[in-house]
Length: 340
Image 1 (cartoon, helix red, strand yellow):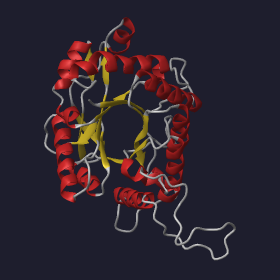
Image 2 (image 1 turned 90 degrees about the vertical axis):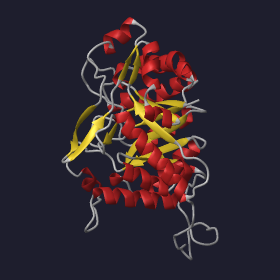
Image 3 (image 1 turned 135 degrees about the vertical axis):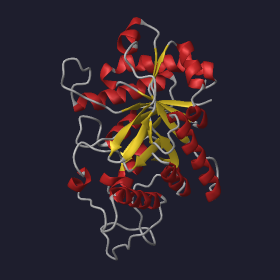
Image 4 (image 1 turned 120 degrees about the horizontal axis):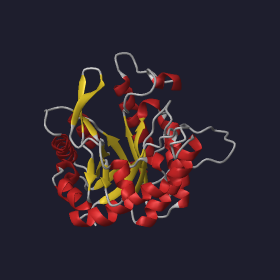
């Protein structure tokens, strides 16, 4: 068995060709797709966070709304860029959204990717400390966030408060018990995956990793996952960690599928640069008839190592079509691979 969810970037575009023409459309359709995915038996509804872009940005109102409209499906992010986050305020928002959802949040956080503007986090009031860079700042924000989520008191109470306080130092409220164990780190390298393991975070790995060996994408990603699991074990954590990978997978079962995805999609890894002097390998997409997808996906080493698969969805094609994409994978591909 493997958990299968969707991952939406929440793109919107005012073009008449887009089915998602405004930020409001993107948010409301995201909620509707999560409801539809739960009805279809999917396990997760995940959302990407990008700032200064026509995409989903502020995750917690959306996560809370999805939590209020659904009952069982996991609700998560992949990922929140921690360079932009006040970890204390984020802990309050996350606690509230998790309580509304009944403890179903699975929060993916990370350093984030190159953004639409230069050093966008500076506009949010953040800057790395002297001698550090933005990645160091993101990890520091993450460490503070993790500590706050433990629910321990740290703030000295006012001796003359407006309302009575419980005894001892005060923690942030609302606190959601167990959320600390449902935090994931989006890693692009083996080193950051191992760091995440030492801190007791689950692992998210997307459709790209930094090229560390020149090997095929799925092989490098699988090696990253194995290194992460070894570091988790060495750290002495209780229980087994969770690992998710993202993939673009489209089963061609009708004329509409063939019109949208039947030709022109890259079916091989690509190497390139998303940051100066840092080469990355981008994983192939999977498109074809269900029987072909079963054969191709069975050879993907990283999917085999992960317990959770996130299907990237073309959200601008509308809720109904994306529900069809998810349903086809769940019913015509996953059973042939032993995932269902």
